[in-house]
Every structure is written in C-alpha cells, then in structure tokens.
Image (cartoon, rainbow, N blue to C red):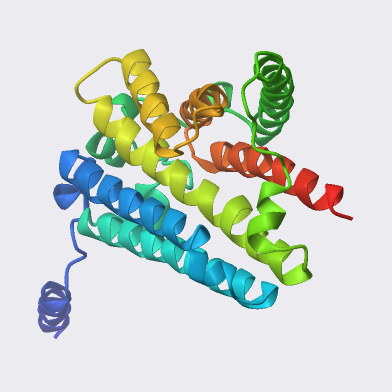
Length: 277
C-alpha cells in the first residue's frame, strides 16, 4: 500500500507543469533593438517639433494650445514606453530586469544579459554600491552639471550666441497650473525615464559588445546630444550622458541615472515658471 502511494505521488509530480527555463531564451540587446528605439525616438521627436511649432495651434486659445501640446507629448512618450515594454517582452524578461531598474543578483542571468555584468552580481557587502553613496553621487553630479551650465551659458552669451530663454517653456505650455503639470509629467518624469532606458541601457549595452567601455560611453553620449537638436546645449547634454552612464554602471542599476536626469530637467522648468510668477 505504501509503495502504491509512493508511485502515485511520483506520477503526480511528473504530471505537474515544469517551470519555464527562462535563462535559456534570454538574449542581450542587439542592433535590431537599437534600430527599433532609434526610429521610434526620431519619429516622436519630429512629430513633437511639428506639433509644438504648428501654426494652427498658435491660433487657438491658450488653454486649447496647452491641452493639445501636452496631450500629444504625453501620448508620444507613452507610445515609446509601450515599445520599450515590447522589446523587453521579446527578450523574455520583465521590464525591471531588462532595463536594470533593480540590481540583478543572479550571476547566471547577469551573464546571459550582458558579458560586462558577469561577476558583478555578488552578494558581498564590500562590493555593493550603497543607496547613500548613490544619493550623494547624484547630488554632487547634479550641482557640478548645473554650475557648468551656468558658466557655459555665460561664456557663449559673451561670444554673441543666442541662448533660448527659460521662458521658452512657458511660451509653449502657458503659465497655468495645467501647463506646469503637463511639463512636469512630460519633461521632468517621462522624458528622463525613456531616454535613460534607451541610451544608457539599450544603446550603451549594445555598443559595449563591439567596443570598449570608454568608446561606447562616448558614442552614446554623442548620439544623445545630437538627438536633442540643440546646438547651444550640445556640450551640456554630452556631459549629462556621460554622468548618467557612469552612474548606471557604478551602481549597477539605472535608478540613480534616472534621478540625476530628472533633477537636471527639473532645474530649467522650475526657473521658467518661477520667472513668470
């Protein structure tokens, strides 16, 4: 009787669905992913420029203009998030794993995702980059970048270059509470998240498969700078990209880089709306 019960238990165990072996099908980022997101970013950027500068919206009341611009801008960013989610799903990974929104403690998964991550997923406290260090580094880099922007802006103004005034944001989105909320959602929150996932994860990790860390960091920073279509801000954006990729690699997660990018974008937004009070 005991033997029959044991055989039945063993049979039931064999009939249970086995857990899916996810590691075997996980793949690293590649040039197909880069092409996908680069195309999506380019299309979204062009459409954004067209809508923000469209003469038809300029003829509408201020509330209507702000509403159209805000809704379309947010929709573009949500579309990009959907594309990023799809690319993560196609790699058989959760969103947080694919885009390093949490530290990967599984060494085998780290090896499958990125060879440069191999050996980084260790549990010793000595090698872990603490949250306190990350916060202090984000704060330090933020002030260093903002001080550079101030000095850089003053220098190019002395050379006679035209610098877009902070009020440019309020010209596009108005001075109402709705306009402020729209700017915060789109420029301070969504844009940094999407740009960090694209440039510091997909592009950078693809580049590191073919070139050194320094070359990959410089290349993604150059593309990031060009992507913003701003000649006067090219150098500050280049430095921001380098600071963010350093943070992402140093802390082994994109969270500190996203935080720095959000703070960097929030500074001109706060200045623009403060000057209109």
